[in-house]
Length: 366
Image (cartoon, rainbow, N blue to C red; front, side):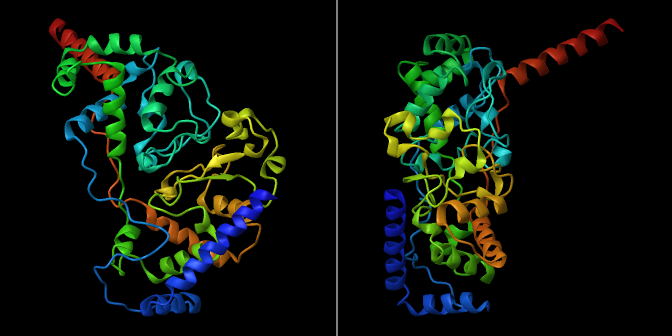
């Protein structure tokens, strides 16, 4: 009941915010057009809009050398005990930086308890992991190395393997006085992760380009706010800045069944009964690309995820047309330029070199 009351208060605060902000003439026009289902023309302005969702930062001020070194480490399988998986194994850049599998897999084929969320824009989250147990990217990376279901390794072992690579050691030495250490590996990888920012059409809209989204997408945004979705999904990352119970207005887990430890959320961290099934609210940026959804990967499509949110978080129904408009708005949050991994995993390079050597040897014998 307390969580439901808090959500209701969030809605009240948001609607008060909306009423105050709707005094601006062009916004009244936009809202009216959205409500009537009609289009309108407004000349774009350079002024940044005052909305509960904020645009992504444009100047990150990151060390480009560390970014490139971190990019290389992100695909390096030597971080894992059996040299079988890298960060990229569970954070697929072709799927919005998330894992397209319901459960992520680590060393020895171990199946994890949750779906790996997107690494894109994750440096903007207030905490890391679904249960928020890591306070920073650095803490998150440190724990991943030692997690028996992910990399199942330790820093002395990882550092020893990486130091056997002269080119990599030279690259580290040029940036870090101590060369390859656990701390420098974490720092470079975290710096690369923080560079994975994905500005979208909606960011251009928020910065004053009112033609960056169309009339239906704007209607979807208005409904996203009016239904109360924005009570949890707001700020620069459209989420990622608060905790919330999964199932505020209905018992999601009782309906789904087969409750596992991973479903306990924050309870695993705090051991407080009130934190059962409480999770970090995920960012909705690039959500069009990151199926399946939720910590359990239970929703295969964005439409299914929206249905679940209406039922268990908002406790209300909505016409199919409204949900479709919200989905159209959500797709404006897809980065216009998705990050790319230009490096090739070390084991792939080794395999290709071995293959070429065999081919050359075979040709020499002919």
